[in-house]
Image (cartoon, rainbow, N blue to C red; front, side, top):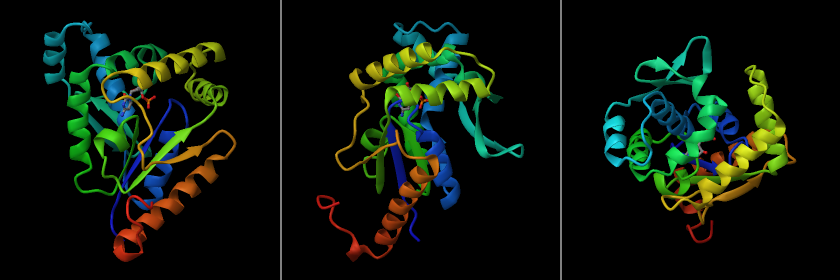
Length: 240
Ligand code: DC
């Protein structure tokens, strides 16, 4: 079957990454968590106290940042994020990074730097990437675009549980406030704001189980993969 690009966008904590990971594993595709890349840059800026208003300092800092994803035998299903050769997977998920990441993601230089790397990763297709601008900016030609949504309350509960599983105790109100703030910054920034691509399929995950989400996405993916193999069965873009 022909390899495709699957772009998954949506608000924070809608289940994008868990869904994307499972879909990639089922298809034997590479999964790329683009949010982890913005988080890794944020961690570097925090550690080196980079002034977010200083364009020159930002350019200089970006030249010293190398982000990679590596699969380890102990985490076969979850590639770990490496910043300049060090595993930062745990640290980039902290609330400290979550508080600053939307500010860093607003910076045009940062976006240009990461989008170029993400586009390179998709050159050979066979990739599932999740984020905020994947279907609109990174891969506007992706064969399958999904836009996930869910109620804020439900999203906050899911994110709080994830943090708790990593021994980080954060109140539901604080998680909710963080999601609300990030949604606002992500959707209103001038540089590639979060928005649903015209040809993206919207999935509200509030009342569906994780298995249902994955199954739904896989069905759509197989349909596209078959369609792209036997081109005439595909509707044109305007019909899709
Ligand atoms: O997916 P996440 O919550 O880990 O992403 C962290 C932040 O990174 C999010 O608040 C916005 C930013 N981001 C972005 O601007 N563009 C992307 N493609 C992915 C993430």
